[in-house]
Image (cartoon, rainbow, N blue to C red; front, side, top):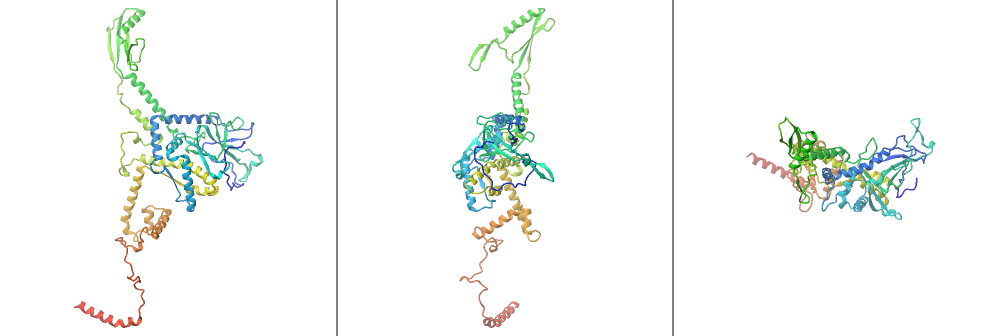
Length: 557
């Protein structure tokens, strides 16, 4: 292979030599495997896939321009990306990351730097929309080759139609590919070379030639490109799909039914007249001539041109809304004029509404959002439609998938600036979360009511804690707290008690909530700890007994 353009991040820990398998790595990103064997080698024939892939991209983009489809896409994008005047659409969450405060601070700073390179605060809506429509997103990470430790200098967007992710199979010696697996000689899957093929003008041709060699284009390294897909892959063809793919058929059906409805209403809306002209015993030729004379005599000769405002003679033009002229032979009822009624029930839109709902269901949008007159009801969560909850979960999955883009960019930035190593990143990446600015009122109402219901159950069961229920049972079964949440909450409570944010329960009256009285005197000495003279105690004994007897007699009286 020729030298790839860009940079690569090498792992210090290589895969052990004994780890072999005849099964190729799972591909879930729409990439294909090619055999690199020179001119006489073989390659995977996927010509039709790549031809249709760019066709799919063009179809997706055409679909996004259709009003109904555009409205549905805007609903999804507006739910996923919430623009606020003061807050950023996305923040990094490192509460679950087991690292020092200094490392966390640097990670937050680098994430903010990456967002500034993307101009994400201003272009978040556009970026997410392009990713949703195309089903893939490419960014070129530009660095200073002379000073790579300076990190990413620029992030350049790449049109999806000009880029393709390719996995090229390395060809080695036949003896190198034979490994003993399960006491048998099995041919192991050879190594692969991953790279991107960039065609500046776009390409509709395969990305390999007949000999398995790469076609014309610029080969870029895997680490120099940020690659984020929708996660939807055609398992038959191995092509990455967009979220709009499911809506191709419903949208075509909606467009056809609308066009046919327009044609039908234009042709059937006006009333037409049928003229039965008595031609008597005239021959065929003369009967036709007589019919034309009558038509030209009574037909409207002057027409109004709405575009220019002129009235002109268009006798030579025939429209689809012309009247009918029919000859009638002798013996009939003579000349007659009847009226053909126009189309009936032209105001019904049931079929249009059906296909609109079908389109919205294909895109995962609640059908209640189709009607523009539908209001927004901030009632109880029990009044919320199930479709809205499903839609909220769908948007959450989209956000989770879209966040892979930030993971790749942040990984490159942290490794280039020597903040973390590739091995450290592999351990940290599962604990790095991204908090999108949330605006889904339905989920918020649902969560609020769940908390209220749990606290209500807690108030009812609290008198029985220690008698029939344990504290651990209540926290797990009533409050629905996990072991990790219980541990974190206990640590937070202990920390807040030490800082004086909340009072110590041992020093607080459980009924009134007021602090218990202190066991100290005005001088600061604790009562009960003063030394007692034994002689004084013995001397005071008879006096105390006499006083006790005196008090007893008074009580009896």
